[in-house]
Image 1 (cartoon, rainbow, N blue to C red):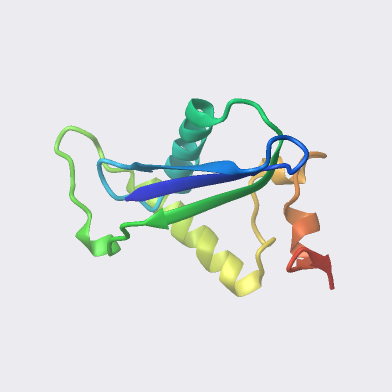
Image 2 (image 1 turned 60 degrees about the vertical axis):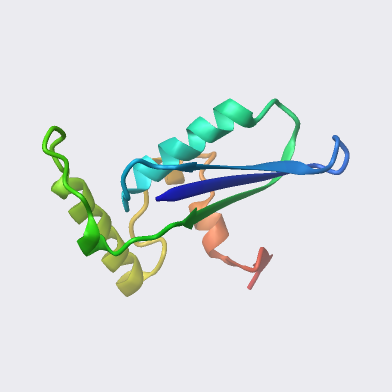
Length: 122
């Protein structure tokens, strides 16, 4: 339920960094909900210095079977199922078996990072 975003600034521009977290009203395992929470934290607390390190941490985890349903908001089971299928494909065929379209653009890093071990080429 809690998403934490940490930034480390470049040594040449102030050094240090910040760490902020947000606890969601309900637990989620949807990638885009976590992503949008990180973007919200970034836009709220980052004031512009160059960033060298970004870290996302998830805490207050709950089992998937313990999700509280909301009578007034339809549960998007299709999105959750797509997430599970994507995870299964990655486990079976490798981390680049299925990617978001943005990962194959010139700014995407998924393919290049897949060839690295601990940030270094194999």
